[in-house]
Length: 75
Image (cartoon, rainbow, N blue to C red; front, side, top):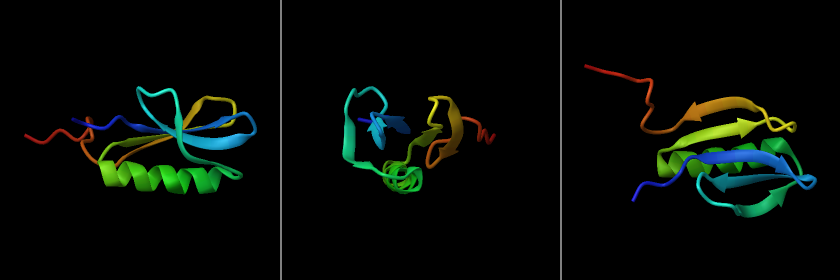
């Protein structure tokens, strides 16, 4: 079964990570965005999924593919 993409986001005064399709964060809440992004990147790389990084206001700031990139079409 494929894992969901990883999302880094800000909630309740802390930076967090969660898998797409779940309602719960994994790991601890992080005091800085950089810490949460590093942990989210490691999880996305390990699972070969996309890492979606949101800004504090909830808008998507960055996306990084660590596996099956849907834009990478090779024929």
